[in-house]
Image 1 (cartoon, one colour):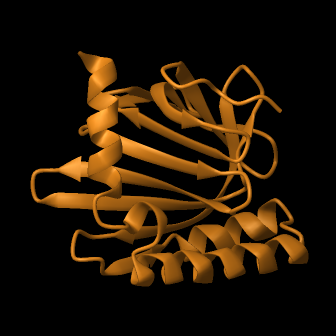
Image 2 (cartoon, rainbow, N blue to C red; image 1 turned 60 degrees about the horizontal axis):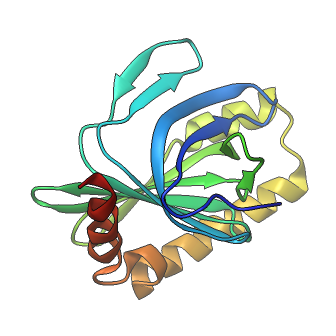
Length: 176
């Protein structure tokens, strides 16, 4: 697996466990790309839902994907601070077409004061039955929810002070 190159503008494709497309982000600028880690930035990018509906993101965001962890993290830069939206998902793959992952419904929203809430547990239960999530996957996902919460509490990775600001400054160099 190659990796997207710094400065490349790529699409991000989210799928569901059944293989169907869930959501596509039209353009994200790669700030760091390795086989195991991709950090990207976007602002006011078009997002297309599986039903064809489109919308535009409202604020700049720094996206963090890892090939080892079953989650990805989006740091959204707003006037009153950084909000994080964390998708419990498969590790990413890069296939020279797009960065791709499977979205497993559970999400964690983290507020600027680092409080957080777990979202979409009902959707996870429903989709788990509909799409027959294997028991092994359920265990992996629940362990990664715990790991992600430890990262939030410990200010690790994208939750570290200045992480988002540092990468946003790099992103701005590509917008000039």
